[in-house]
Image 1 (cartoon, rainbow, N blue to C red):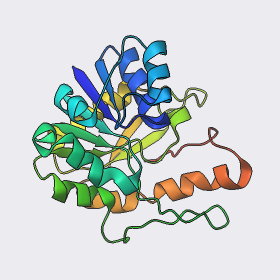
Image 2 (cartoon, rainbow, N blue to C red):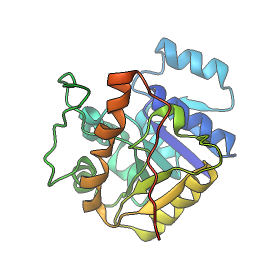
Image 3 (spheres, helix red, strand yellow):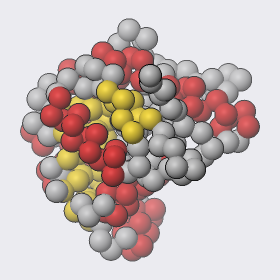
Image 4 (spheres, rainbow, N blue to C red):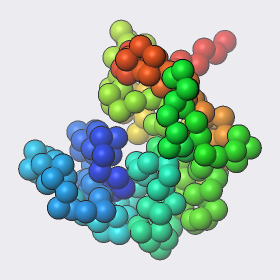
Length: 216
C-alpha cells in the first residue's frame, strides 16, 4: 500500500517514518519541496519520497492530512479533490486558533456543534475521512510505551470500511481503537486535543500521557 502524508512538519514526518517502518511506500507532501527541513528529511530518509501536495495525494492509496487546522481546507484544495476522492483520509488536524492558550487551555476556531472534520467532509464529500491521531502528540503516535498498557485512540467517520482500515493501522502502531461513530463524533474527539495539551503548556509534559477508555 502507498501512503501519502499531506503535511511536512513534525507530525507529518513522524507518521511518514512510522508508515515506512510498517512496510508502506510513503511520500511526504509539502508546499515547498526545497524547504531546508524537507531536504534534510529526504537525505535522512531515502526510503521516503517527497512531493507537492498534489503529487502526494495522487500517489497515496491511503492519505494522512497532517497540517495545521487553519490551513486544512486549503491543503485539501491544493491536493486536488479528484486525488482524495474515494480514498481513506486520516484526519489528524485540530481547529486550533491563533490566540495563545489561557492557563494552558487552547482556543478553537470552530463551534462545538460542528467539527473541522465535518467541514472537510463537506468540502470533499467523496473522500472517506477518519479522525485519528488528533488527541496525542507526535512523540507518542507510533509504538507508545506505557508499560504494556495500550492507550486508546478515538476515531470517527462515516465509512465503516475506512474505519476498519484505520483500526488495523492503529493496531500495528501500538494503539487500541475506540470507534465513536459517524463524523459528528469528531465534535467530541477534537476537543481532546485541548485537554491533552494542558500538561504540556503548564508542566512542559509533552510525552507522558495519553487517553485510556475503560470498559466493563
